[in-house]
Length: 287
Ligand code: PMP
Image (cartoon, rainbow, N blue to C red; front, side, top):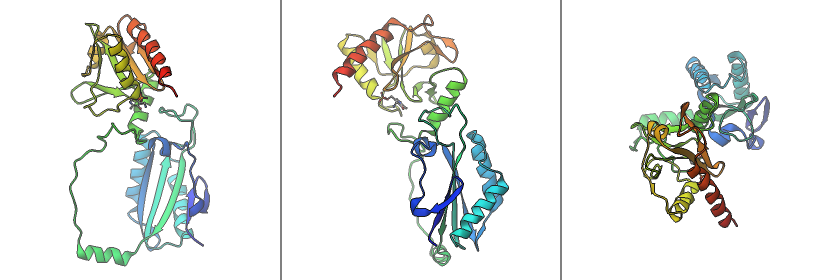
Protein backbone atom coordinates (compact mmCIF):
# COMPACT_ATOMS: atom_id res chain seq x y z
CA UNK A 1 0.00 0.00 0.00
CA UNK A 2 1.30 3.51 -0.85
CA UNK A 3 0.98 6.72 1.15
CA UNK A 4 -2.44 7.49 2.52
CA UNK A 5 -3.80 10.74 3.92
CA UNK A 6 -6.64 11.37 6.32
CA UNK A 7 -9.12 13.96 5.03
CA UNK A 8 -12.24 14.79 7.01
CA UNK A 9 -13.04 11.35 8.32
CA UNK A 10 -11.68 9.15 5.54
CA UNK A 11 -8.35 7.62 4.63
CA UNK A 12 -7.64 8.21 0.95
CA UNK A 13 -4.69 7.56 -1.35
CA UNK A 14 -2.27 10.46 -0.88
CA UNK A 15 -2.31 11.30 -4.61
CA UNK A 16 -6.09 11.77 -4.57
CA UNK A 17 -6.34 13.62 -1.26
CA UNK A 18 -7.96 17.02 -1.79
CA UNK A 19 -9.57 19.82 0.20
CA UNK A 20 -12.45 21.97 -0.96
CA UNK A 21 -11.52 25.18 -2.80
CA UNK A 22 -13.46 27.21 -0.25
CA UNK A 23 -11.68 25.67 2.72
CA UNK A 24 -10.80 28.66 4.89
CA UNK A 25 -7.28 27.32 5.32
CA UNK A 26 -6.81 27.65 1.57
CA UNK A 27 -8.65 30.97 1.27
CA UNK A 28 -7.48 32.81 4.40
CA UNK A 29 -4.77 30.77 6.14
CA UNK A 30 -7.55 30.41 8.74
CA UNK A 31 -6.12 27.18 10.10
CA UNK A 32 -3.58 25.77 12.53
CA UNK A 33 -1.23 22.82 12.37
CA UNK A 34 0.98 20.58 14.43
CA UNK A 35 3.84 18.25 13.57
CA UNK A 36 4.98 15.36 15.73
CA UNK A 37 8.25 13.49 15.18
CA UNK A 38 7.78 9.74 14.99
CA UNK A 39 10.16 7.48 16.86
CA UNK A 40 9.49 3.81 16.27
CA UNK A 41 5.97 4.68 15.09
CA UNK A 42 5.14 6.67 18.24
CA UNK A 43 4.22 10.36 18.48
CA UNK A 44 7.22 11.96 20.15
CA UNK A 45 6.97 14.66 22.81
CA UNK A 46 3.24 14.13 22.46
CA UNK A 47 1.70 16.18 25.26
CA UNK A 48 3.38 19.45 24.31
CA UNK A 49 2.11 19.26 20.74
CA UNK A 50 -1.45 18.42 21.77
CA UNK A 51 -1.44 21.26 24.29
CA UNK A 52 -0.19 23.74 21.68
CA UNK A 53 -2.77 22.50 19.18
CA UNK A 54 -5.56 23.08 21.69
CA UNK A 55 -4.20 26.52 22.50
CA UNK A 56 -3.82 27.54 18.84
CA UNK A 57 -7.36 26.39 18.08
CA UNK A 58 -8.75 28.12 21.13
CA UNK A 59 -7.00 31.40 20.21
CA UNK A 60 -8.79 31.29 16.86
CA UNK A 61 -12.12 30.13 18.34
CA UNK A 62 -11.98 26.95 16.29
CA UNK A 63 -13.37 23.97 18.23
CA UNK A 64 -11.29 20.80 18.64
CA UNK A 65 -12.52 18.71 15.71
CA UNK A 66 -12.75 15.68 18.01
CA UNK A 67 -11.60 14.74 21.49
CA UNK A 68 -7.89 14.47 22.12
CA UNK A 69 -8.32 10.71 22.63
CA UNK A 70 -10.11 10.31 19.30
CA UNK A 71 -7.54 12.49 17.56
CA UNK A 72 -4.74 10.39 19.02
CA UNK A 73 -6.36 7.26 17.61
CA UNK A 74 -6.73 8.83 14.17
CA UNK A 75 -3.12 10.09 14.17
CA UNK A 76 -1.86 6.65 15.18
CA UNK A 77 -4.04 4.97 12.55
CA UNK A 78 -2.58 7.31 9.93
CA UNK A 79 0.95 6.43 11.03
CA UNK A 80 0.15 2.70 10.98
CA UNK A 81 -1.50 2.80 7.56
CA UNK A 82 1.55 4.54 6.13
CA UNK A 83 3.83 1.94 7.72
CA UNK A 84 6.14 4.69 8.93
CA UNK A 85 8.30 4.07 12.00
CA UNK A 86 10.71 7.02 11.76
CA UNK A 87 9.25 10.21 10.34
CA UNK A 88 6.79 13.03 10.83
CA UNK A 89 3.03 13.24 11.19
CA UNK A 90 1.40 16.50 10.07
CA UNK A 91 -2.02 17.62 11.26
CA UNK A 92 -3.92 20.61 9.92
CA UNK A 93 -7.23 21.86 11.28
CA UNK A 94 -8.96 24.67 9.40
CA UNK A 95 -12.09 26.56 10.42
CA UNK A 96 -13.89 24.63 7.70
CA UNK A 97 -15.53 25.20 4.34
CA UNK A 98 -17.77 28.22 3.76
CA UNK A 99 -18.64 30.71 1.01
CA UNK A 100 -15.80 33.21 0.92
CA UNK A 101 -16.28 36.00 3.45
CA UNK A 102 -13.55 37.34 5.74
CA UNK A 103 -15.60 37.03 8.93
CA UNK A 104 -16.34 33.61 10.38
CA UNK A 105 -19.17 31.55 8.85
CA UNK A 106 -22.45 32.67 10.42
CA UNK A 107 -23.80 29.12 10.34
CA UNK A 108 -21.25 27.01 12.24
CA UNK A 109 -19.28 24.64 10.02
CA UNK A 110 -17.24 21.62 11.03
CA UNK A 111 -13.50 22.18 11.24
CA UNK A 112 -11.68 20.48 8.37
CA UNK A 113 -9.00 17.96 9.34
CA UNK A 114 -6.09 16.76 7.23
CA UNK A 115 -3.36 14.37 8.34
CA UNK A 116 -0.32 13.29 6.36
CA UNK A 117 2.58 11.06 7.33
CA UNK A 118 6.08 11.14 5.91
CA UNK A 119 8.97 8.79 6.42
CA UNK A 120 12.25 10.19 7.56
CA UNK A 121 15.83 8.98 7.17
CA UNK A 122 16.95 8.91 10.78
CA UNK A 123 20.50 7.94 9.86
CA UNK A 124 20.80 10.94 7.52
CA UNK A 125 19.50 13.17 10.30
CA UNK A 126 22.13 11.81 12.68
CA UNK A 127 24.85 12.30 10.08
CA UNK A 128 23.74 15.91 9.57
CA UNK A 129 23.81 16.48 13.31
CA UNK A 130 27.34 15.16 13.38
CA UNK A 131 28.35 17.57 10.56
CA UNK A 132 26.54 20.67 11.84
CA UNK A 133 24.80 23.25 9.59
CA UNK A 134 25.02 26.94 8.67
CA UNK A 135 22.33 29.61 8.95
CA UNK A 136 21.66 32.97 7.28
CA UNK A 137 19.99 36.01 8.84
CA UNK A 138 16.92 37.77 7.46
CA UNK A 139 14.89 40.79 8.67
CA UNK A 140 11.97 39.90 10.96
CA UNK A 141 9.12 40.73 8.63
CA UNK A 142 6.38 38.29 9.58
CA UNK A 143 4.11 39.67 8.19
CA UNK A 144 5.39 43.01 6.94
CA UNK A 145 4.34 42.69 3.32
CA UNK A 146 0.72 43.84 3.32
CA UNK A 147 1.43 45.35 -0.12
CA UNK A 148 1.19 41.84 -1.58
CA UNK A 149 -2.37 40.66 -2.17
CA UNK A 150 -1.67 37.33 -0.55
CA UNK A 151 -4.17 34.82 0.82
CA UNK A 152 -2.36 35.00 4.19
CA UNK A 153 -5.46 36.80 5.46
CA UNK A 154 -5.87 35.42 8.96
CA UNK A 155 -5.35 38.82 10.68
CA UNK A 156 -7.82 40.38 8.24
CA UNK A 157 -10.37 37.63 8.91
CA UNK A 158 -10.00 38.06 12.68
CA UNK A 159 -10.33 41.84 12.34
CA UNK A 160 -13.45 41.49 10.20
CA UNK A 161 -14.96 39.12 12.76
CA UNK A 162 -14.24 41.68 15.49
CA UNK A 163 -16.05 44.30 13.40
CA UNK A 164 -19.03 42.03 12.88
CA UNK A 165 -19.25 41.22 16.60
CA UNK A 166 -19.29 44.98 17.29
CA UNK A 167 -22.08 45.49 14.75
CA UNK A 168 -19.68 47.24 12.34
CA UNK A 169 -18.98 46.51 8.69
CA UNK A 170 -15.24 46.98 8.63
CA UNK A 171 -12.21 47.09 10.93
CA UNK A 172 -9.49 49.68 10.52
CA UNK A 173 -5.97 48.62 11.46
CA UNK A 174 -4.12 51.18 13.58
CA UNK A 175 -0.30 51.19 13.59
CA UNK A 176 2.14 51.62 16.50
CA UNK A 177 2.05 55.40 16.10
CA UNK A 178 -1.74 55.46 16.35
CA UNK A 179 -2.45 56.04 12.67
CA UNK A 180 -4.96 54.13 10.58
CA UNK A 181 -3.27 52.04 7.92
CA UNK A 182 -6.22 50.50 6.05
CA UNK A 183 -9.29 48.34 6.50
CA UNK A 184 -9.40 44.55 6.74
CA UNK A 185 -10.53 44.49 3.10
CA UNK A 186 -10.62 48.13 2.04
CA UNK A 187 -8.66 51.40 2.08
CA UNK A 188 -9.59 54.13 4.56
CA UNK A 189 -10.31 57.79 3.83
CA UNK A 190 -11.52 60.96 5.53
CA UNK A 191 -12.64 64.39 4.43
CA UNK A 192 -10.80 66.44 7.04
CA UNK A 193 -11.96 69.60 8.80
CA UNK A 194 -10.56 71.73 5.93
CA UNK A 195 -12.51 69.74 3.37
CA UNK A 196 -9.36 68.01 2.06
CA UNK A 197 -9.42 64.32 1.32
CA UNK A 198 -6.92 62.18 3.13
CA UNK A 199 -5.82 58.56 2.79
CA UNK A 200 -2.76 56.68 3.94
CA UNK A 201 0.30 56.93 1.69
CA UNK A 202 1.51 53.77 0.00
CA UNK A 203 4.93 53.95 1.64
CA UNK A 204 3.06 52.49 4.59
CA UNK A 205 2.63 48.76 4.82
CA UNK A 206 -0.75 48.62 3.06
CA UNK A 207 -2.34 47.12 -0.02
CA UNK A 208 -2.29 49.51 -2.96
CA UNK A 209 -6.01 49.39 -3.62
CA UNK A 210 -6.98 49.70 -7.25
CA UNK A 211 -10.14 51.54 -6.26
CA UNK A 212 -7.98 53.87 -4.15
CA UNK A 213 -5.67 54.56 -7.09
CA UNK A 214 -8.43 55.26 -9.57
CA UNK A 215 -10.32 57.36 -7.04
CA UNK A 216 -7.20 59.52 -6.59
CA UNK A 217 -7.40 60.28 -10.34
CA UNK A 218 -11.12 60.97 -10.08
CA UNK A 219 -10.55 63.32 -7.13
CA UNK A 220 -7.84 65.28 -8.93
CA UNK A 221 -9.94 65.49 -12.09
CA UNK A 222 -12.80 66.85 -9.99
CA UNK A 223 -10.46 69.59 -8.72
CA UNK A 224 -10.63 68.42 -5.10
CA UNK A 225 -7.64 68.49 -2.75
CA UNK A 226 -6.19 65.21 -1.55
CA UNK A 227 -3.28 64.45 0.77
CA UNK A 228 -1.76 61.01 0.96
CA UNK A 229 -0.96 61.19 4.64
CA UNK A 230 -2.04 59.30 7.71
CA UNK A 231 -4.87 60.10 10.10
CA UNK A 232 -5.77 58.84 13.55
CA UNK A 233 -9.15 57.41 14.61
CA UNK A 234 -9.70 60.64 16.59
CA UNK A 235 -9.12 62.68 13.44
CA UNK A 236 -11.63 60.48 11.63
CA UNK A 237 -14.20 61.16 14.33
CA UNK A 238 -13.48 64.89 14.09
CA UNK A 239 -13.59 64.78 10.27
CA UNK A 240 -16.47 65.96 8.13
CA UNK A 241 -16.76 62.56 6.48
CA UNK A 242 -15.10 59.18 6.30
CA UNK A 243 -15.36 56.37 3.81
CA UNK A 244 -13.77 53.14 2.65
CA UNK A 245 -12.93 51.95 -0.85
CA UNK A 246 -12.54 48.57 -2.49
CA UNK A 247 -13.79 46.50 -5.40
CA UNK A 248 -16.40 45.00 -3.07
CA UNK A 249 -17.66 48.20 -1.46
CA UNK A 250 -16.72 50.77 -4.18
CA UNK A 251 -16.94 54.00 -2.18
CA UNK A 252 -18.78 53.25 1.06
CA UNK A 253 -19.53 56.08 3.52
CA UNK A 254 -18.50 55.42 7.14
CA UNK A 255 -20.73 57.00 9.78
CA UNK A 256 -19.10 55.71 12.98
CA UNK A 257 -15.66 54.67 14.24
CA UNK A 258 -15.59 52.56 17.41
CA UNK A 259 -19.18 53.65 17.99
CA UNK A 260 -18.25 57.37 17.81
CA UNK A 261 -20.21 59.29 15.23
CA UNK A 262 -18.38 60.79 12.25
CA UNK A 263 -19.67 64.17 11.01
CA UNK A 264 -23.40 64.31 11.41
CA UNK A 265 -23.74 60.52 11.49
CA UNK A 266 -25.02 60.22 7.92
CA UNK A 267 -23.29 59.54 4.59
CA UNK A 268 -21.66 62.79 3.52
CA UNK A 269 -22.02 64.64 0.21
CA UNK A 270 -18.35 64.24 -0.80
CA UNK A 271 -18.36 60.47 -0.32
CA UNK A 272 -21.67 60.12 -2.16
CA UNK A 273 -20.43 62.28 -5.04
CA UNK A 274 -17.16 60.34 -5.23
CA UNK A 275 -19.13 57.10 -5.20
CA UNK A 276 -21.05 58.07 -8.31
CA UNK A 277 -17.96 59.58 -10.01
CA UNK A 278 -16.00 56.43 -9.23
CA UNK A 279 -18.70 54.14 -10.60
CA UNK A 280 -18.78 56.22 -13.78
CA UNK A 281 -14.98 55.99 -14.14
CA UNK A 282 -14.89 52.28 -13.34
CA UNK A 283 -17.52 51.67 -16.03
CA UNK A 284 -15.50 53.73 -18.51
CA UNK A 285 -12.49 51.56 -17.69
CA UNK A 286 -14.48 48.34 -18.01
CA UNK A 287 -13.66 45.96 -20.86
N1 PMP B 1 -6.91 46.65 1.48
C1 PMP B 1 -7.12 45.35 1.69
C2 PMP B 1 -6.44 44.68 2.85
C3 PMP B 1 -8.00 44.62 0.84
O1 PMP B 1 -8.21 43.31 1.05
C4 PMP B 1 -8.65 45.31 -0.21
C5 PMP B 1 -9.64 44.59 -1.08
N2 PMP B 1 -9.05 43.74 -1.99
C6 PMP B 1 -8.38 46.67 -0.41
C7 PMP B 1 -7.50 47.31 0.46
C8 PMP B 1 -8.99 47.44 -1.56
O2 PMP B 1 -8.37 47.05 -2.75
P1 PMP B 1 -9.13 47.16 -4.17
O3 PMP B 1 -9.59 48.57 -4.29
O4 PMP B 1 -8.08 46.81 -5.15
O5 PMP B 1 -10.28 46.18 -4.14
